[in-house]
Image 1: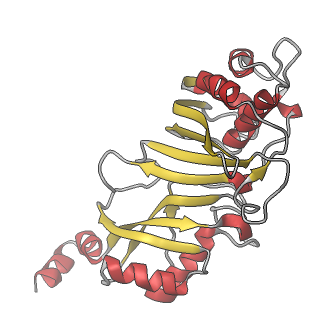
Image 2: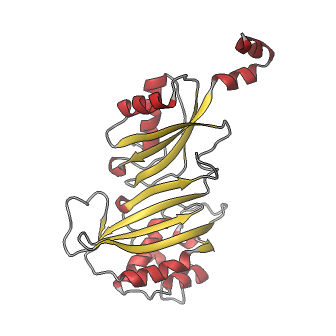
Image 3: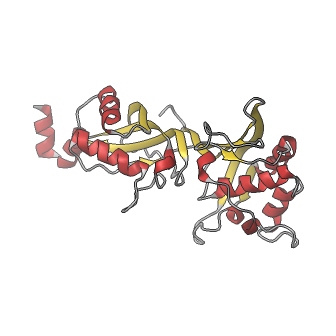
Length: 275
């Protein structure tokens, strides 16, 4: 009775009360997808999630993602949000979406959030991990999730170079495709290089920032790899950030091949309050 009264007196209020905004925590193995963002002719993570939502709710729902991962990249902690008129509870959403989704995409959590929640704009930081298999021979078990680099890497030198990335900098040199009319200044909270396990020779590069631009992480880590190989000194990163693309004629970022996306994984998205 109250709903009918509200509906007749204030249609917009009734519409809001009939819908809710949900946020999902999603993981995926991105090998078979052309990235997160929807594309007309290629399979994407966003496309698969929206198809699953339609099959479950019957609604044509457009979702938002906290980060637009690259083609072939993975996620352990992607966050998406959307509005729905479905009255199903959050646990039912998890079970139903996992039923309709492909095996390489899974919903881990579902929460009802405030109507104004925006998974992308409200995020305080995003944490990415890049995995490198550093040994003379490749591995079948890690071929889809690690970048294989046979040359020995100097982890300490790479980590020393990575420390120059922390703080507030203009990172446009590492993201040349970023639109010229948009800011390329980002705040990096940490950028660390560690040896994960001696047994598997897995080198982990983990970075956290308030935001990243397209290909920024993979191009930056490619420079760190060159430092690790001994081809560049540890202060190269600082020189690039200070002087841009051509650093006294000895460092050209464009000449360094970008690392493959398969080693990249979105680990976590942080918000002011538990999402």
